[in-house]
Image 1 (tube, rainbow, N blue to C red):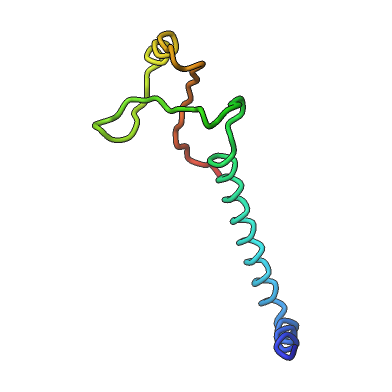
Image 2: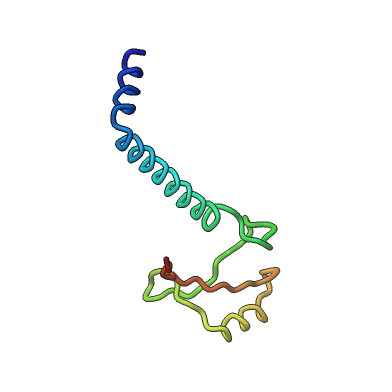
Length: 101
């Protein structure tokens, strides 16, 4: 209890320090909340319109034996027309974009 009283007295003596410390804590909490919200919405939650996410597969072509390369739209339509084992096929485009502040 004595430590708490001492801490409060020192904050009352220097209110500018208390304001700066409180602002930095609020800024840190806001940044963490923003990052978590983006992570949750982009990587954790299921995509809209996908009713059975456990049955979703990713189709692409390997680029030099590593990773996935983009497919052209005609390749997508050929896959969709010729698929006998998949119930449906969807396409998406993922590009990193710079944020403008």
